[in-house]
Length: 444
Image 1 (cartoon, helix red, strand yellow):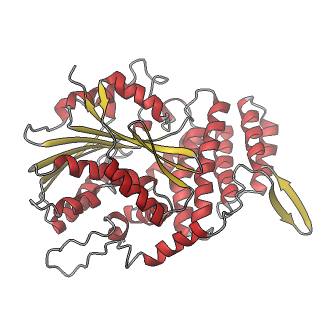
Image 2: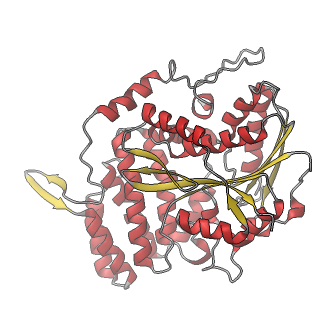
Image 3: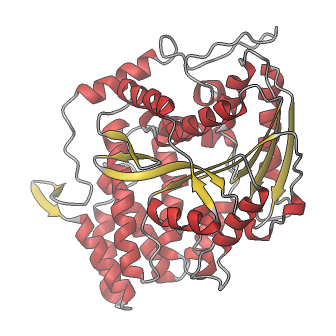
């Protein structure tokens, strides 16, 4: 299962003689059925989507009630904001009658937003979010849900592919590569790069990864990062790539240059995909922690800084504005799943609950330092990066061409891979959902 999800499609390197077959996700073999299904999704007429709540019909015997869930949710958020508790609970009751984690995209969206609104009313948002973070979910269970996501949606796979191919191009014949990964999480990005490096004609470089993430609650703050390191070490041993791993579990703005082991004879890459949104911004501290992290990366002086993030605008301090933007953003995601994954798929439900549902709970029901979901648009991040002393590197159009072909062959026609200046943008039905760009510190 790990191989099918995490390795590069179409690459079949010779493995060391062992009894374990390489379950590479070969588009001509193991994934043919899934790819045919995705192609059928592209060829089929577009589904009528009710995301946004317009004209949703709930049958009750012979009666039909037309429910606008998006309007009900917005009215409920307004009532919560103005402390109109009675009206808020009345609206929640109506929403819950027409929402479900097993329904269509609109019903699922309403389910998770209603849960978050209810938690905000009851003052339990922080506790519920903290409980979801401490709940032990195995990497294998998360991977099953992630498999559904990457088969249905190209966002993560293409962002990782662009980053990995950029790194492989940069390292060329260099004997040593050091990647400092801010927000390594389960390390799902790296097996494909390890596989690719093992096939380098001059032989693989000595790979060193410094995995950085926020400390986990409890007595073992570094446990998940260390498990990630062990999994990556297994891949490196299997593909014959010399490997070292170092784990750092700290608040990112407290990390110093002395915490990192940097050697002069290595190609140095800093990677941060989709996680700087979890670092506090100016609203939370006079000295902005995001700028502190960017200044640290500047001092690290990498040969390349790869920066990817979701293109979200739901970071307003005013609750109703934030709610409206979050509803807009997540409705696009649920619409995307509705068009590409069946309602009955358990991996879909797990991903919606454990990833999107948890993020929605944090955005809607948590405030202050407890609200860690604080995304910004790619244009806002461009201002931050330039201000911190980085210059943007040109897009690699060879990689971009490969990704566009991949999107056309394997994914729904409503996905897009575009460029804006030196940004690679991905979207769904015209809405930009994430962005990736490569940077380098300026000499000044």
